[in-house]
Image 1 (cartoon, one colour):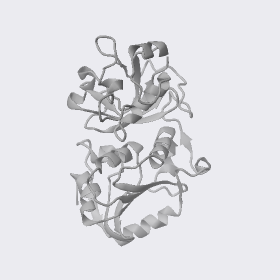
Image 2 (cartoon, rainbow, N blue to C red):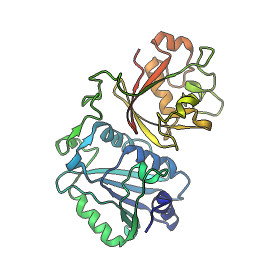
Image 3 (cartoon, rainbow, N blue to C red):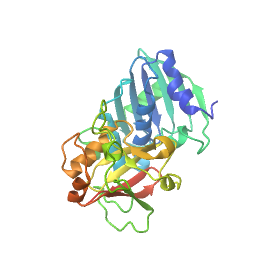
Image 4 (cartoon, rainbow, N blue to C red):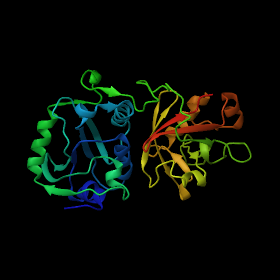
Length: 317
């Protein structure tokens, strides 16, 4: 039985046994957790693994737009060298699957498996937010059960996936296309400046973080004042969270750097810089100036907290 160090025990230590594929059946799962795992598997295995995920409770609870689009984005994005492929599927018919299985295989043979209360979500594996109980179980039986469930699933990237599952709004203030449908004044929000005290973007920080020799020039972060970092508004402990933008994009972000001073796109630091340069009408890798922001009509960005892992990011002019 395990109830602590679950990430190490279940997700990382087995890599030292030469396994090459991980099968996860999870009642609930989030793209933030998948993104976190993609980031933290870095340098933990010499050979890339295949990752297979089934989300089990979709027939019962349906799936939010942001979770579905988050999975689609990660599955079709570039993977770290430690991962060769990712497949994500949803159970489509009842009975929904409320159990959780983590099965490690090598050369197609099940070698190690865990079952228990831990969903594939960050609150199960990061920090001390709740207790989970997990047991080792028979890997052959676990894989057989996984296979039986897989026959009732649809890939998240299937062209007609919405014919098989129901998508619901991420939050009552967002409609199905992630547009604002009501005011957000009654929700917690913060506005973060994109310029320094002298009124200019940082020369080698913020939106221009990558403007240094040997760095990818699009690398960027949003400066986070200490008082806001300490307020509890954003998740800390390097947990990943989702930002749904006013122009219908979705970004996976996290708070990091010394004293939690920066909001970044952790899987690929240049994603944030590419996003803002596109909004500003600049070429990839361009140096961002105050004039660029003024011409666009905004020098800050607003975050509205929808839940603990989901935010609405407004950079509308």
